[in-house]
Amino acid sequence: MVNDYEQFIEKIKVKTGIDLSLYKEQQMKRRLTSLYEKHGFKSFLDFYRGIEKDNELLYAFLDRMTINVSEFYRNGKRWEVLEKKFIPELLKNKRNLKIWSAACSTGEEPYTIAMILSKFLPLSEIKILATDIDENVLQKAKIGAYHERSLNEVPIEMKRKYFQKDNDYYVISDEIKRTVTFKKHNLLSDPFEINFDLIVCRNVLIYFTEEAKNSLYNKFSNALRQGGIFFVGSTEQIFNPGKYNLEPIDTFFYQRI
Image 1 (cartoon, rainbow, N blue to C red):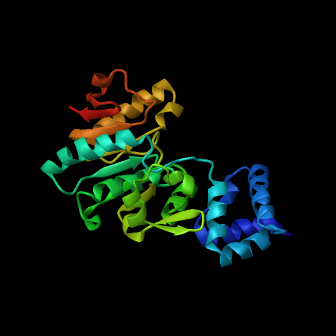
Image 2: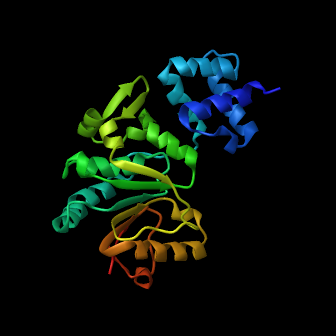
Image 3: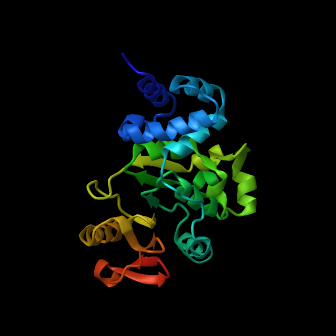
């Protein structure tokens, strides 16, 4: 007989594209049981019926099932450097920039890039590729609903312009969503596209071995056009950038030479 949790998994997959069977069952059940009990439900199916009726419950579920804690405009000063110094430089030569947010998790990073670019270009001209190995986080990114804590660094005017508040959650506007194409991609084994003007890959490479990092720096460098920019996380300084045909142009920014 199909149990309560298995039915819940099936229904959630149809509704959101998220496959809970890919997570450790005991751990996920524990996490979700405490969530539904907190909201006064008695079973997974009861909880699902609640989700059907109330977006707030759907967002709470999405929040609970992803462990990744990500934020918009994380390390805000670095995004300021991108906006003030490098985007104008890149746009001097061409309007249709080719941009990749690699290992984008639940979407905060590519959506941040889109908001920054919206100060320079109409949204209809912005195209960003965003990839991650985890299909579930990509589905969550496409839904685009975020807990208030993820928006701590978002400038007030961007918050007003591009987010709709729904109780404790903020839903990003469709016009920003349309600028981003999400795809599943494994950094270690899948081929990279080429001729990018900007590649953003932050707070991911710290999880790889030195050998894997070495290979990835080469692959990222080859994926950039000459003069293209590589923006890394605040714990990921490249100690020998010349080895990868990169040169430092600001803290955590490198340029293909």
